[in-house]
Image 1 (cartoon, rainbow, N blue to C red):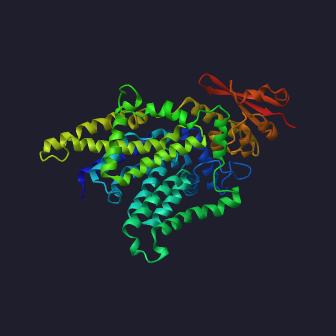
Image 2: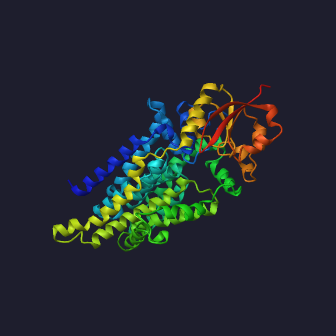
Image 3: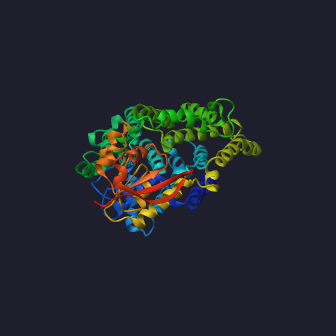
Amino acid sequence: MRHPVVVTVLCLCSLVPIVAALSVEHRLLGDDPLITLTYAKNISVGNGFVFNQGDPVLGTTTPLFALVVGLLMAVLPVPGTAIAVWLSALCWVGLIWSLYVCRDAFRIPAGLAAWIGATITASGWVAHLGMEAYPFALLLVATLGAVYGGRPLLAGVLGGLLFLTRGEGILLFGLAAAAGTWIWWRDDREDSTSLLRMPPFLMAAGFLIPLGLWSLYAMPTFGNIFPNTLAAKIAQVDSGLWPAFQTRLIGDWVPGWKIGPSLGPALFNVFFLLAIAGLVRAAREHPRLLILPVWGLAYGAGYALLGVPGYPWYRLPIEFVLIVLVGIGLGGLAALCGADHTQAWRRRAAFVPGAVAIVVLALGGSLEDIRRPPVHDKDRAYLKMAEWFDTHGTEGERIAYMEIGYLGYYTDLGIVDLVGLVTPEITSRVAARDFTSGFWELEPEYLVSLERSRFILPILDNPEFAPRYERVAELDGFDGLGLSVFRRYPD
């Protein structure tokens, strides 16, 4: 067996996603993943991209993930939430192995691929299993591997799938296509006698295969190929009620990326010191990996310029780039400590500092989340709320609330989304902090009220509300706040 030590390390690392998936309480994935899975649920029964009722609306940023989970739900007797968790866990396993499998394309040694794989394992996104984060990262590496491996048509197809997994994949594909074109122009352009065999053409053709198929469905169904969510999220930041992406990046996420304690400012943490060392080493020895930090910068700048809110999972693409750089830095640290020394004890000792860093990273990352699965009281309250509606609601009725994932997935009732993600009629009003006129225009049968909610209070305070709606249930809330259900009086 080639590289037995590396293969053994990666096999051991592959156990972590399996254990993590087993530890996740898949019914309580969080509200946002369940928005996507509501679409998957409707796809599985042949309804297409509808949010239980009404016209089709693309209220998820990951149509490919919704399609794949929906198709699997149609053929497997397994809950969609469990399918989503295991699909993302298997993609995590694939990501751990990806740099090793593509090591020749990236021109990196097997040992470095092992360091990167171990770092990906230790810093796992257990809290985001069930989302598209790991499928996106795996497709990202696979796209680059196909470009650098001289398979432009495959690279194009993978790039198209990457774009349909999350829209920012178009940035990576553009950079990858530029890199592939440069390599071809530098090394092989004289061998290409036909346009149809030129890598730039093949990449473009491959990209258009999944994009074209999606467009054939999306254009007549939605009128465009892009999610409605972008407009809604820009409106959320414009309202001033959601912190912007760059605010969360600087204030919350950068200080949170660390290995052990920080020595003063956040950037003086071991995590960032290793990432900087990894960036330098990539520039000197592994230039094909430099496309990742370039893409990370483009992604961060793009999200800041778009003015989207700082949802926690928006940090993950930048975090992935940093994780890879930390892995490169750990490989450089091992080399500096004598990993290539002629004496066996020196070679073994050289791996100790990096192994310690991996363990410390895991104790604050993957292992901590496996030991204490990140489930919040809000998730349990929302699940109970959805179960109440599933019992008491009637087909054709609609519920208004501002967090609609649990309500969408665990009931078949219609949803009026007060912040506009899946209710486009409300999107433009959110920017003006208007969460009431859409409610009164649509007049749903139910309103859920979270105590002291700034979204709900203006509706409750309207003098028209009390004569038209009655309180029918008090449900367990969260964080000391109660949940109330109001039902419209019969006409």
